[in-house]
Length: 322
Image 1 (spheres, rainbow, N blue to C red):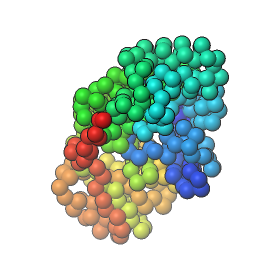
Image 2 (image 1 turned 90 degrees about the vertical axis):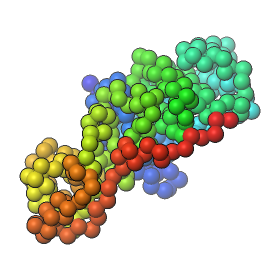
Image 3 (image 1 turned 180 degrees about the horizontal axis):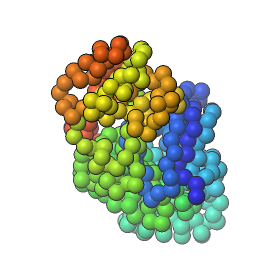
């Protein structure tokens, strides 16, 4: 069976500007995949706004372009392109017609999708009058018009207060019925509604500074301890081995840009590794990392804390809802 998301050394550009470089990951078929961090380039590829310049990105065994054009993939962006002068039902009907449905069939599909998401009350509302959460609900409805097997929803709770976050999370969970869901968040969730989307994910990927730095269940990613991004100019393999021997969790940057847990690598695979994510039980002091680097002669050129859940708890102010 093909994996839900497969990527190999992918470069994604938008109008000639690189958004993603060296992206590699393999996610087996699953019900829900969570993405934390800046995955906007990947979603731009999903929506067709960006292009795959090199490498490979596949969804359920098909290229992203093929999945999108066949209706296998439905995409809802955090800031959806809407014709705000139109009513919701008209917008969805016209979107369905663009997808190849006849006028009567398209109108029926629009109504059915709104009903399935519990949003029939929005049918006659002009999009300009909707809240941020309601506009995202319409974007999700539009993504379902072709009955996709994979639904990708970008940061649905971004900037929302808890009430509106709960509304959109309910829509997302209704939308997932019978299909795989790829859902993103810009940071580890702090609200109850946002947590619902990620704590039940089969797999969660974390991206920092354009690289995958962590992977696992949400509870594992939120475990106590500080995480630091460490780069050295030489003796990286010796440093990683010393840190692990000292009881620290270490993930290693591969040539592709992805990070792999130290325990999953053979000694030969460490090669000339020089960039790591190191987890400390006591996040208040980086002395253990510095001492280890001095002991093996590994000059540190980067030692930066990575965001934790607490760091993001008050980092976003709710958007104005009207």
